[in-house]
Amino acid sequence: MVLRDLVVHKKPRETSGSRSANRFDFQKDWAILKLFELHQYKDDYLLVLDYHDDVMVLDSEHDPQSAAFFQLKTKENGVWKLNDIKKSSKGKKGPLPSIIGKLYNCKLTFPNHTLSLTLVSNACFEICLQKHAGKSTEKKLICLTDIEKNDLNKLIAAVKADHALQDDPDFVEITFLEVTDLNIKDRETYMKGKLHEFLESINPKNGKFRLSLIYNAIFGEVKRKNDYEWSVSTFDEVKKYKGISRSQFQNMLRHFDIDNEFEQLWEEISKRLNADKVDFKTILKLKAAWKELEIARMDVTNEYFQSQQLVIQDILYEKEQIPFSFLYQDLVESVFTEYKQREPKSMINEYLIKATTLMEYCHV
View 1 (cartoon, one colour):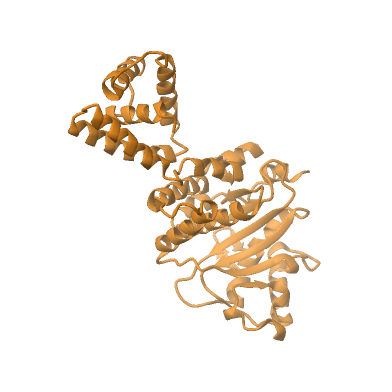
View 2: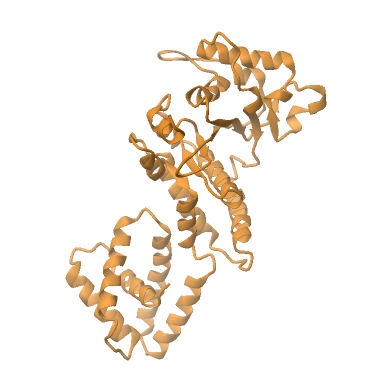
């Protein structure tokens, strides 16, 4: 069975992950960092959230051949020791697998497609390494092949016990312990710094970005996908409800006004409004609505707003050949009048409709 079918037909071990994921945003921010990395260095990918593991990265959104799995764990204080990783705990229905055993479950589920298994944490790992490998607490990435033999055998034994295996599992060379610089207590500051770095890497000519708006939009989309609890029955549904692909993320970036064209456009429109002698209070209301519009455009999940944009586009198209002298009085007001006739129960406020009309007319 090909990987895209296995992703759907091999159901995740448990379904409570999405419900409990709401308690902690660390996982979502780490997924955003991984998204930045993938988008910079991979021509194709599909990042899947809280499905089979905390984060699953497929090498293609259409025909994936391999999958990398990431399990996220945090510590307020201290380090991870060998026993923390290999010990089993008690559950309501019996013993629960160890951290390493749960991670290995992905390899069992996808034996021919697993590229790597990685345990990621904000805390260091205090584990005995082979002499050539150095000190574990000073390393950002440890492959299990570097762990001292006795400790490695204990991890292997834990996996065998968790899954009742007769033979030693084949996972050592593809399993990693990773320490992230993402801080639990100061995530937002760190994330905005990383976001700025990412945006500069894709648009080095512009050093001015609306970081708070863009971060909130990306975080909201990741949270929505991560916390989606309903079952999925096709690979396309996995992409739609649980994943973010390169093409999807690229589409999001197009709405983020990375070139500041949206802000510059308002400056041009406001000059035109002043020249047309539009009263000051109206301009202030339109300016406030313009900021609201910028946020609404970033929300790719707001299907209602998108549908109303289409209505406005249709009205503008019909009025394309009608001459007008004043941008606001002749064009915007007439579009608003027509819009209210077509959408009498619209939930969008008057000035957001008018700001959207200005944006659509100017072809942003």
